[in-house]
Image (tube, rainbow, N blue to C red):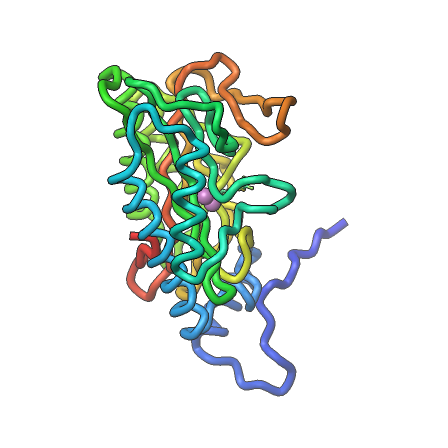
Length: 285
Ligand code: MF3
Ligand code: CO
Ligand code: CO
């Protein structure tokens, strides 16, 4: 049986295809996965996502000056909620599929989706990822950073730094008219060259008009090309690197917290990017 490739890109009946349409159609006709039309943002949508990005970056910058030893992750959550409200925005995390707080706070062996708590204090030597997603006028921007508390073991510091390099390499790899699979290939290569593993269960994603859109952005070599990258697409890259094994589990107690199987540290950095005619624009800088 011949399996027919799903036709993502559609030119309305009666419309004259533009050069842009023809270019995408030429990839589609060769059997490559191309974006659906609605993944290409309009200039108005891009401006909206940019504005959401400005608030989101403001939150992370504010945390950079506020986060310190002795604070709880509940304190971090309140800072995020207050800043978000003060800027006329909404946290995308709060109530998302039942998530109870306004950001994710993931310490040491927690990979991602840690739930802020008044019972959880930051200690000297901890590393913490804070992942913030902001909705402004209906548009989404999603980014996370690592914060190091006091004296962090140089080996752990190196994990944090290499993970940031992996995000930067992913961003440099993301170019129009290449494929999303190239991003994970480049990230995986850099992670492994430095002796780290890459988490596979969670991925980057399209975003902007909703929290999570197509395509999936894997951070390892899946051996698939994945979707064609086209100017106007908005997506996140958010590699998670582990010091030990790549395997993770979800804490049954809360159904959210993702933890490394061997309880060795994990790090993550995330940006939201616009694919432009020539490369990318980071919308969460
Ligand atoms: N911000 C995360 C991401 O990068 C998703 C968090 S979902 C939540 O995709 F519900 F845990 F907030
Ligand atoms: Co994300
Ligand atoms: Co995020």
